[in-house]
Length: 80
Image (cartoon, rainbow, N blue to C red):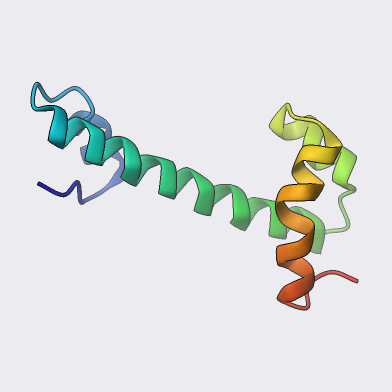
């Protein structure tokens, strides 16, 4: 069974007794979180936030956020 629906419905599915349902919900939520991070990192960079400021907001190292997002942004012509 594939987890679908809103974030709220996915959150409810993670507590399902059926491991297939719960694990699929975890995968869907993980994908959603990655997409949300990408959107907000792009918004921050578009508003001239430094990599350090973004890292501080995400509570990770500057190197981690830069490694994860800078090459993608360059490939999309969003970063110099």
